[in-house]
Length: 154
Image 1 (spheres, rainbow, N blue to C red):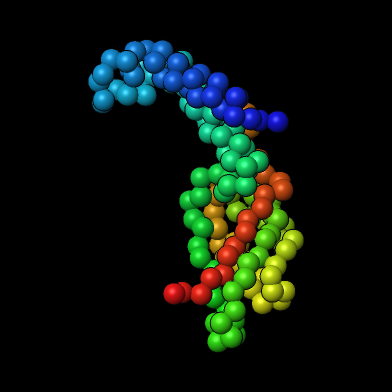
Image 2: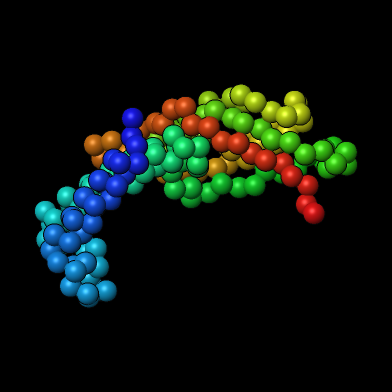
């Protein structure tokens, strides 16, 4: 399991790679985090991507949103719930496919039942996430969760 100690180690590794050609320590902002040759650039991009994926995994284990959300639209508030001044939430489990789209969405908790689920699922399916990359290939992320809150405007 990935933990905070690993995150700190990866952070230091990431910055060591960024300094490998002197770009960070040189004080030249135009060259910050820019490796000078092709081999350094490939190594830097690989480590940066791996570091980003591991940090996302750390966030997932601590209940924060996973991945860099390119698009996460707000759900429509159901008119029936709005008229009745109802508030609630929906918790969903899903898989992020290789293109970054949610699939296999299932509601694992909702309060109140059968009020907000349809709109929460519709909003989730419109979301776009950063797909997980392994060995340079986008792969599915299983077991992701998202809690959608429905609160009345004050």
